[in-house]
Length: 77
Image 1 (spheres, rainbow, N blue to C red):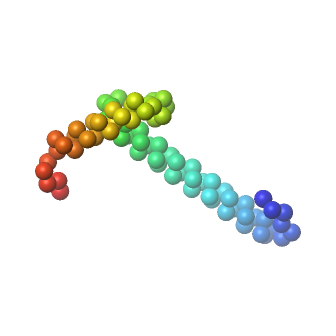
Image 2 (image 1 turned 180 degrees about the vertical axis):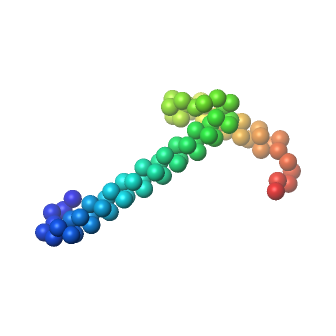
């Protein structure tokens, strides 16, 4: 961070940095939960950390989702 002569400005910068870090952390947590839920639905089991980065697991998820989309209703509401 750039040096600041004014203490109020330094406090403001610190609070903005903390809020930004908190927002990034919360959004990353939400994305992780959604991805794990999607994988659990497709794989039929809990997704491990290795499954989240595995191309093979993601290919199975894509195949399962495509198969479910084809066998679904013609006109979903």
